[in-house]
Amino acid sequence: MKKLVVIAFLMSFSSMYAQSFIGKFDSKFQVGANIQKNGTGLNLSYDYGLGQNISVGISSTYLLSISDNIDADFGDRFDLKARFNANLGSVLNVDEKFDFYPGLSLGLKNFGGHLGLRYFFSDGFGLYSEFGFPIAKYKTTELTINEKLHNQSYFNIGASFNLE
Image 1 (cartoon, rainbow, N blue to C red):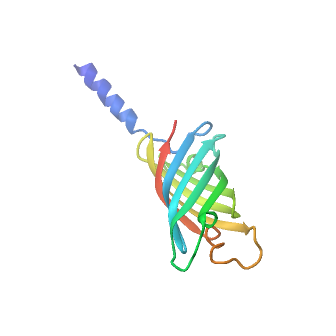
Image 2: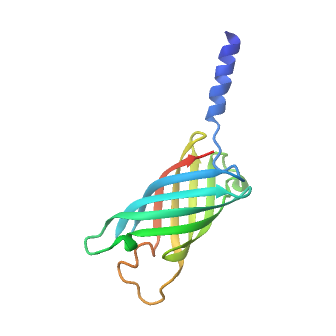
Image 3: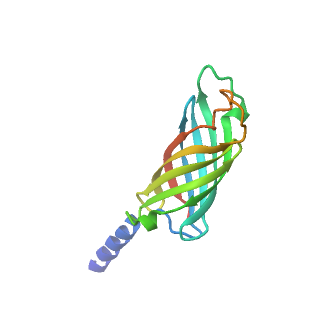
């Protein structure tokens, strides 16, 4: 009976161990809210670890709600980005459950950057937040109000899942 209790204790302790980014072959899926001027929507992203501190991925956002003065079609509401992250949680050594990841993205609307945070509560579930901004817009003339959607600073917040 004592052995059974010890084994149960060790198993419960090991399941509490969570690591935000383990490096090569790590796989994360995130779903959350996208908040930007004149619109809010849904953000989905996937990151795949290429090395100890490097990941690449894809991110997509669709604005579900926009300001009344904007008549936006699907192309205005949707954005898709390829992304590169420098996962610095292990470098900063704050906590194994914490990851800070600055990165760059190349999307349908612009070339941009982002700063993100992840914190995992268990092996499979955590929260993330991300602030993004355009570095270079594809259109150099004045943008229309529709073109400013996904072409401005944004904030994402939501759940992160470890797919490993």
